[in-house]
Length: 419
Image 1 (cartoon, one colour):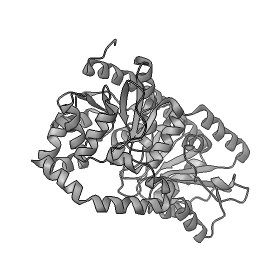
Image 2 (image 1 turned 90 degrees about the vertical axis):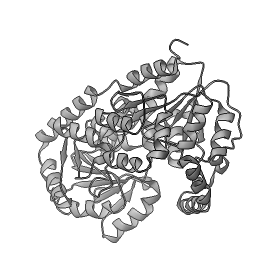
Image 3 (image 1 turned 30 degrees about the vertical axis):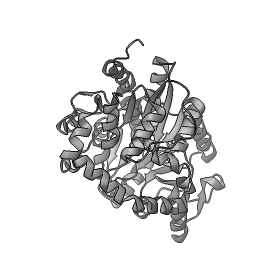
Image 4 (image 1 turned 120 degrees about the vertical axis):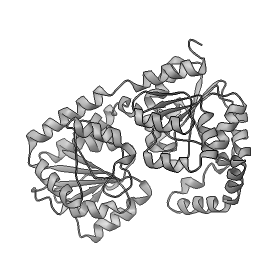
């Protein structure tokens, strides 16, 4: 009965869903492409056997790479169907996997749409990345006896409380999962409490994602071009944070220092460029070229180059953490050997952040004032930065291996070992 009311609510919200697509389509026209797929209508027929992997957006798409490569090696007779929900995630899939996977949007969770999805693709089994729980999708997979597993699963205490208020709806959905590979014991406990029956801890798959050799080389080229100029990177900043980053930047008195500012969402690039221009700063956009000697801020308005920015920077602040947004993931920075600073709000990646701080790879700051003071101090302290760089690489290497652990669980839980 709870799922029936949930489906009715989805149908009633359809006009708002369309308005949201149209609104997003104003800045990103790609949102208005492949609309049929969002309702379970697909043009091309699937080429034979499929393993389905769902990664909602950019971060999950990139994090899935080591697991997708492991699945392709284990079952080479199957093609990988990679579904997502956003155009940026789809573009990330094109950049990372090229023609090595089939890409499509996962339909909205209407009963008829998910029936059409499974009827069209008929995957051998499905892998959902991180925390993607769709009641109708999982109910239909269970009805068709298609195993679906939740991999690299994470669930904050805040999200668990939210799910708990909808127990009648979400408990059957979690219960329909064939198995769950959680990032931490805390994630595993919260997910099990919500109704999942087979839950094991495998660590964080993002530690297995090796930085792009090409992008690291690009960052090294930028570094050589800038010479000894100090560089601070503000990575994946969210709405409202750029003003705070600039407030911190005013505390940095190191001569000739360069701020590299990379907003999290591409639709905000122009907005942030306008903000910087309004502050009277000497700004160059990445899309316009490289920073000049007089450039104060280099705006990273590019996609897929974060590893290059980390390779360039002397240290990085990870966005989403100065405001109560939960923070972005610092694992890629660690893998690139870049010292990290985070704000007070890191509940989305709490365990990885706390472990990184304990390892000496990251520091937490309380507010923009302290952020600026710590940046200023670290830019003047090459020995401390070198120590943090070494700690970052050691931290990243110590947590690798999740992909193979997850692959073993998938083989066991789906009964496909050796097939």
